[in-house]
Image (cartoon, rainbow, N blue to C red; front, side):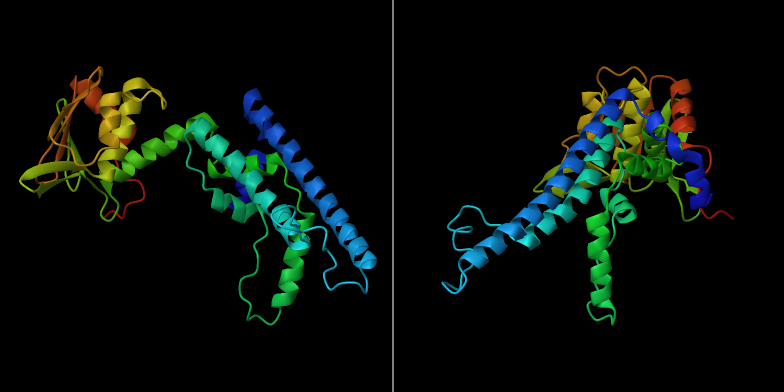
Length: 305
């Protein structure tokens, strides 16, 4: 699907696809962003006028034309400072909205990527023959830029390929689990499932013998799969069982075996010195269901024979 096809899929419906609470948040930030842009533009105009008056009043008296405006640690402004803040609010607007949707829907949208798509990029190569022209064009574009929150929503839904925001979080989670469970180089599974045991074969954990006191550390791929198990257990992103969450965040663990207290579907995890990890489910049916829904039956995107 090319970019134009993606745009055709989201068009003007993005605003209608968010909740009323989301819309209220976006509209409040839109109003604050618009107000800040207007006020900063007015401030730049008034500041230039103030400096002009000071220069005129002090003409021929002193070299410092703004003697009474920037003393000590008090007010200290310049046209450049105001312009920097005016240019900065575009990124702040994008960042606040993207962070909100990331937190609310457990997404992993890149603020930097969104800024690159929505905000003109400052020229960086000073050795280009037309560098000064590029700077002038960039400055005018930034001064004229007026983002709408719907512009950001359009980019978000392009990122999700049109999926609803609540669906995207689960899509990303399962994608992470799948990547952890398969070797993309040859399309082979890094796991096996026998009865109620899911075995992760490969570098899924490490053992360190430090000062005669060994410690265990689950690999990042194991943590990704454990996040999937937590969601499989509760059906919720916010309600992660403590017994699983401590393993997701853990390093330097004392033991090789941990039970998932309070869980009904997944029961325990055991690590081995050959980097293997076993995850035990309460039934074979749950083990098969987790593999099917979160790990997948084939390697997506791998180079297969």
